Length: 306
Ligand code: 3PG
Image 1 (tube, helix red, strand yellow):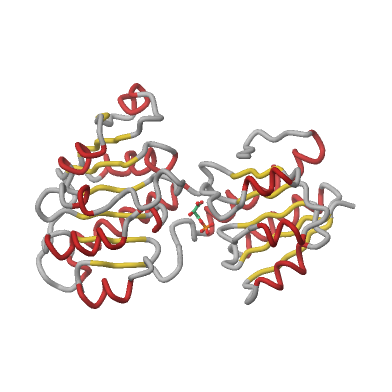
Image 2: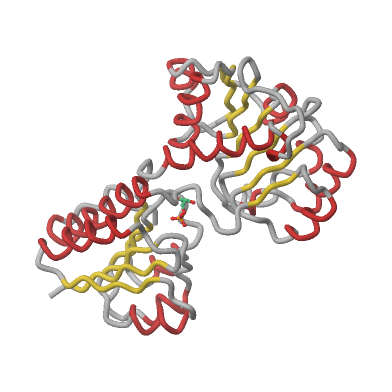
């Protein structure tokens, strides 16, 4: 009997866990659950006899892969798979998949929670500004960016996007203006919302030069990965441009320094919570479970990333 381990340091909503269990057990497989584990050893022990592993942002590195002798499939229930060593998995004959789009509305809604928070001066009681009529730049127009654009229209915002991997027609059909350089995106938009993945090419790619191109009173919103922002460059930009705000899901490594030095201009979530809704958990978790079943029963690996 195949064994499917769900290992989530940050647990799914209970309804999502129940749904995943049903999909796995209805397929005739054994469901195993490891939630809120305190140490990596717990994960190493739990994965030892698993055939498939479903994770969120949990680190699946070489040590985990080495510990998992039977493992054939890792499904990252979510979009970004920078937490999985995809090359190491490949070398061990393990397929890695993600579940693109399943949690993107949750992340997009959080973008607006953070945008309003920044525009209203972190709810400090002072006079802020409205989103209506303002310009929003999307750095990447994937699933999350598209949901952000949809919601932005409801606020009456004008939306630009920069995404060299997305056809311009896709943006235009969504009522979004394509821009042709990242510099142009940062120069012309009061809000910029980051939606690029963390890759060797994108890590630390957003720094002083880009941030300081932003117009007066700009807000930079990062619900992607903290690693794509160069923290030293960000700190210098916030120093030189006292009008700029930075809000991020999740806190950067220099969060304490930034919070102390730029109080009222920065906000960070303590844990990554863009996808932390019941709906997103259910969508991504059950999609992951269905992908596990489709993989073992029919050899389907449509969302393979390695
Ligand atoms: C993603 O890449 O899908 C999001 O960052 C969600 O991550 P999480 O599952 O850890 O909340």
